[in-house]
Length: 394
Image 1 (spheres, rainbow, N blue to C red):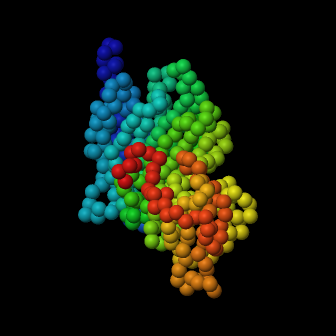
Image 2: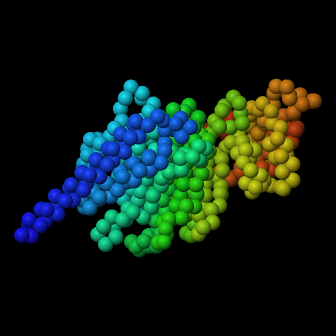
């Protein structure tokens, strides 16, 4: 009798799971049949329905994931989902109704699941984290973009999800942190946006601590790279992000962007390094809000130069960087041209930058005349650099 009841129970569970997949397929077909709105990349509230149906079905399968290798489990999940995808047509830019391959990863005691549902030109990906509590996988964190209002919708392509948690003597000491790195590629050009977010998974609910979207340049397939850990001190969580962004030099167009943060409780502070070369530092100093740039300024009087260059910079290019007689000083020249060039227009500007190892920069002074003690050409000062060994091939 017990065997009969068990068989009936398993059959009922299988039927429920089949019904869930049928519902997923029906929603995907509906998404496929809708006329896409280009302003929201074809997304609508129905897309959230598909995301949650997909998520709920996967969560129903997690009970079958034990201590096995994650690859066979991922293979079974994606094999089943191939049968319900409704994508595919002659329009290779409209992915509505399709499903991306579900990605699984175990890190820091959490199971990370990344799903994707098709929109125009790309997938809108969602990420979830599960923790085993009383022998069951329970969702403790998620990242979705479900606001489809025009101008508000930023679908995410998730390049990486990183987990960090402090351990002491083999036991967790504090909550885990989750960092996501992503991009908004779509049908765009090499200029696109990158996103980076950091949550602390508290007992009550996750707290979003960093949430930024910035313009970037797609120099390689590695849109954005980052790390999270505890390298700076023993109490702060260290977040380091690197990507390629535009610059003010109309001839070079892009540079490596460095975003370094320390998280102490709910407080997030940007710290050194902010750049990896004197020229990049000048670019960073000129293009950030003064409230940030003043932290890397030797004097508050530099605000006058900052304000002038913010409002009236004209066409600009960086000239040769010169090393000064004082060992830790460099001179960066910003050359202006066009209608504003010349004595009656906008003069060239010379930035005196202090560089202390490894990458601590300070704006010492700004002038419209060069410093006489800065004469040594230093082409290596502005060589391309990275803080990540995996970036060396770029």
